[in-house]
Structures are given as structure tokens and as C-alpha cells.
Image (tube, rainbow, N blue to C red):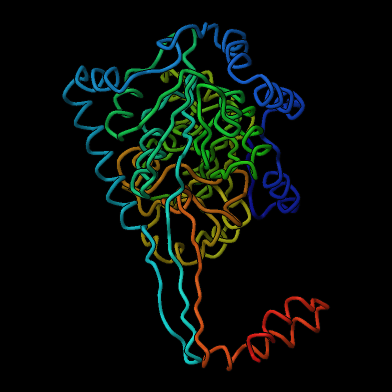
Length: 430
């Protein structure tokens, strides 16, 4: 864990190093992913069989080996304990309500020149949703990806998920039933994304691919962008907690570890103006690490990438530091979070006040938990219904409106050296 103080003479250098630290997996995966995608494109289902056996120890044979049926998902949902089923129902209903409010409105109007202008929003035809099946097999991620797609109006939602040695997560299947997923294929990794993008004899192609995954999945999405749309290229999880000394140090320590337990490359950072409180949080982290079933992973993350930053004035210094970090999750555990909310421009999602732990946002609050990482919050947003939709503009002129704006179009076309453009306008003027 790194300890920094804004009063240290070398603070800027050390903080800049923290901001620019590369936490993605230290492997040259681009070449391997390119080879896998090329094989899937050329060999289709045969390549999927080979890679599923190699990476997941799972043999894809007859049709039942390839798909998980809606009936199996419904069965998994029915077999849940009532408390768990109620929690999943609550999460789904809140996620659905939040994303329904995101639906964009069509536009259709006539301007002062008499030109009809507007735009129509339409869903993509098919969306591919990646659901991890290794260390991170999360039903919450399925809900966060599938429900916005359904709300957007996507007719065909296709889940791909690895089933190591044939094992599937019943909670994930229950979530798929609740979200109304149309297809579930028992393939994962970069080869599954290749199948979604290029299509195979069994798996028909999609238009958009979303969902979290490991370094190979992220790289596959990067390479496939343009063949399909993607939500984002996501890296390791991260949390920034801005907290004053009035907080319970155990709460803040738990918040920091809530992201550290995801992966050894995750990052948890605390900014506070109370050095004594910072020490208490550090001690609490050490204690809680010994009590967590995920302690080994969380400790590796905290030791390698964790940081506690003590500043002189929280309100004036913390927002500027937060904007440079542009973290995936930002908690504002202070008396008046509204002040900082207005100052923090770059964050995937912001959690307001002492009673709003990031973990609530992961499950039941409503906003999407698929968020930009690795400082990408500077230019991108979390997953929304818009990732499953596209906008088509339209315009219409009559003779009167054409007479008003057509000549200017011809003039600009001549200036750009495009005489056919100009002629298509000028012929109508005659």
C-alpha cells in the first residue's frame, strides 16, 4: 500500500506515477487473441470446440452440450431460496426502472427555413452479452447487461459464458430467466466473442457485444470493434473513497476491500484530510483481510495497488485529484457530498454520503455497474440503453425550403472541388 501526503515535496511526482500506473495484465495477449479470432473466423464451430476443450476442459458435442435452455434457466430461478429470489427480483426491477428512464426521444420538427429535420432511435437487431464464468461469475452482471438491452427493444439477446468442466452457475441462469435472455451458449473467452462477431454455423452474428471479462476478452473486444459495436474496453476494477475523519474506519476499510477482492490488479484508494483516521483505516484493512474468504486476492491488490492519500483541505484538494484519477467508482463519504459532486467531472459513478457504499450500486440501486476503468471516465460513460440503440437522422425539403438553402450547398460543393455534388443541387434549381 502506498502512503502519500499532499504536503510532501515529491507528492506531485508520486501521485502522477499512481495516476499513470498500468494495471492491466502483464501479458502480450494481442497476438494470441488475434490468432484465436482468425481461427474462429475461418474454422467456425470447429475452432470453438478446440478452444473450449483447451481453456475450459469442456467438450462441445451434440446440441445439448452447446446451449443452456430457457427451461433450465426457469428451473434454476424456481429452485432459489426465497430470500435470494426476492433480492434478485428487487435488483431486476430497480435496474429496469432506471434504464427505462434513459430511453431517448425521437425528434421531428420544421425549422424557420421550412426544412423538416429529426432523428429516429432504433434498437440494434441482436446483442451479444459476455458473462464471465471463472473467478467472476456474477448474476448481477448479467442483469446489468441484459436488462438495458431488453429495455432498448433488442429482439435477440445472446449470452456467451464459459462453463469450466461443464459447470454453470445456477444464479447466473436464474438471472438470465429473470432478464428474458433469448440464447445462452456454453462458450467463453476470446473465441466466444469471435463467434458473436463473425458468426458460425451454430451461433448467428450480433451487432453489439457488451459485458466484462479478463484481459483476453477485453483485447478481443478491442480488435473486434468495427466488425461489431462494443460497450467499452474495461480493465481492472477500481474505487476511490473520499472520506473525512467522521466516518467509521471499519466501514471505509470494507468499502476499499469491496473492490480489492475482485482481482489482484484491482485498485483501492482513500483520500482523507485526517492522518489519524487514515491510520485507523489502514489498521482495519489489515484486520479485515485476515477475515475475508477472498483475503488472498484482496491482499495482493491492496499491497500492490492500494493507496492512502492525506491532504490538507479535503474540499479544495480532493476533487482535483479525483478528476486526475478518473476512477470507476467514487465514494463521497462527507457531510455535504453535493459540493464535491459538482466539482468531480470524471468518474464512472459517484456514491453520495456515508450511507451509500459502492456495493449497493453493484446490485440493487439501479444505475449500471458496467463502468469505464483505467481513466476512461474522462471520455466515456457507463453502460446504458444507448449502447444497444442507434440514431438515424432524417430531413425533408420542399421547393420553397430548397430555394432557401440549396444555393449555399452548391457553393460549398464547388469550393471543395466536388462538381457532381454541386450539379445534383443545381439541376433542381433549374
